[in-house]
Amino acid sequence: MARTDAIVLGAGIVGVSTALQLVKRGLSVALVDRRAPGEETSYGNSGIIEGNTVFPPAFPDLPGLIRVALKQVPEANYHLSFLPTIAPWLLAFRAATRAAKLIEHARLVRPLFAQAVDEHEMLMQEANATRYLRKTGWLKLYRGDESFKKLKPELETAASFGIPLERIDVAAARALEPSLAPVFAHAVFWQSAVSLSNPLAVTRAYAARFAGLGGITLSGDARTLHRNGTRWRVETGEGPIDADRAVIALGPWAPDVLEPLGIRLPMTYKRGYHRHFRAQGDAGLSRPVLDADNGYVITPMEQGIRVTTGAEFASRDAPPTPVQFDRLLPKARALFPLGEQIGETWMGSRPTFPDSRPVIGRAPKYETLWLAIGHTHWGLTLGPVTGRLIGEMMTGAVPFCDPAPFRAERFT
Image 1 (cartoon, rainbow, N blue to C red):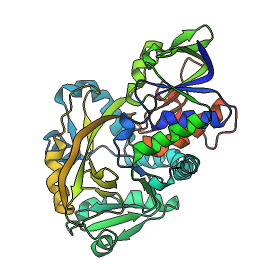
Image 2 (cartoon, one colour; image 1 turned 90 degrees about the horizontal axis):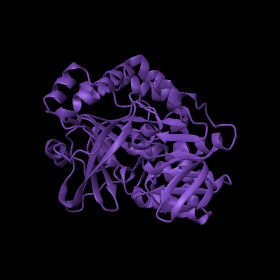
Image 3 (tube, one colour; image 1 turned 120 degrees about the vertical axis):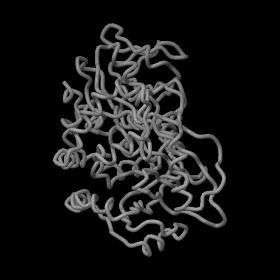
Image 4 (cartoon, rainbow, N blue to C red; image 1 turned 90 degrees about the vertical axis):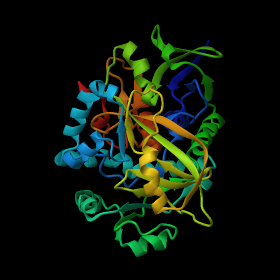
């Protein structure tokens, strides 16, 4: 039996970043997952580190809700059988995304997002992974006047935070990305957003840095977590490992461990998909591009042009239903000359709370159990800064921001 100061359960970007931040603070740390680092939910994303994020996705207005209900739009899908399960969550989500609540959310989460890019860049330099970093911003496109007008509160809030952005016309957007067709009417260029050409490689680089500093990575089942006297124990392929403290960073699998411990939190899942494509001819992209009216992102990756879908509300373990591609690909091909598909369709589940804020801090009922879960669309963005906040709280340092908005007890 091995002993450490802390066990981190979950080797996605949040778990790996947390383990790395803890070992940098002098703790002996074991990182435990059933798969290799970065191979689950963290693998499938648009690669954007969204230091510019202001508002979370909001509940649609009535016309939008009708289109979603009739499955007429590409930005969302749902399984009818899942609706009774998710109904209470949807009502809470609707309440949390009213105009006043969106402003409050923006203020509460701003310290995390404001520090996100710097924390990533610091770890990338240490992990020799800066070659994956692009400082080319993020381009958001709006096909109609109505969708662009709805953006006004978000742009005003961003300006109040000092986030650099530029409203640009079609010609200016195409000067940035000449391969885009002029099928949109407005664009916003968020200059401070950065992106990655290979998110999996970055997670692996952080894991390698963790190992280089003395951290150990083990294969094991997080569901075996249990109390062993005053310590936490997890069974691994190399035998049991004990620690004074444990961190749950399991993304959508967190309830599998927390509920047997008597901890129930209102987490649900926004499933998402991506595919890679070749670009036709000499077409190319220099940065991620959002088609805001259709809810998908096209972004350049080492594997090809990645197309990511919007949300699908379905049970975490239900079979994949990538029907959103049928709706969005005609739109995407009209915008950018996508060629043949490369590889298989990927699916993952994004863990999300109704207020779109993660839970970062001590678990209810357990002084030595810590949570880093529910990052919604921003696990990649917030992984390192979440790890820093956990590390500071766990070691008694002064937290860089107020952790109160991220406490699990806000749901009780």
